[in-house]
Length: 160
Image (cartoon, rainbow, N blue to C red):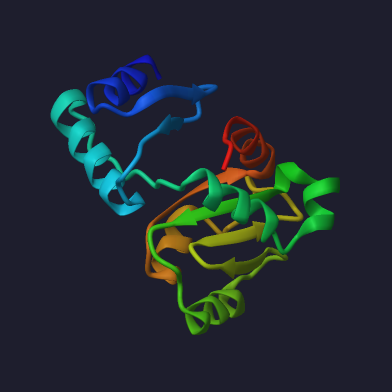
């Protein structure tokens, strides 16, 4: 995490901080789009750290909207450890999401709002056959998931 925080400073992204050891970064930046920031971070991580990875950037306003758009409010309150927000590069098409839901063999439920797939794993994430790789393949876009507790902690660190 310290390497990633140093990377933020070297890339002139201000007030960089990380949340736990989760790979989540909070930073300030004016005048760049999230797509531009994703490219800057990906290029910087590869060149400076030898790390080839995807970054998924959201503004503070977008993160608050993600929290507000959660289609599983009851589950978020009663069972936040089994609710995941999968932040995606692109918004999956409605037909793709419907096909994914039909293909699920367990009790998992997926609902998509914009560039976020909300997934409720009522029987637990560790035992589910609905993995990140399957989600990326079926949704046709890459993403990174965070459980609802982490989503809220990130929300508390940002101010729109």
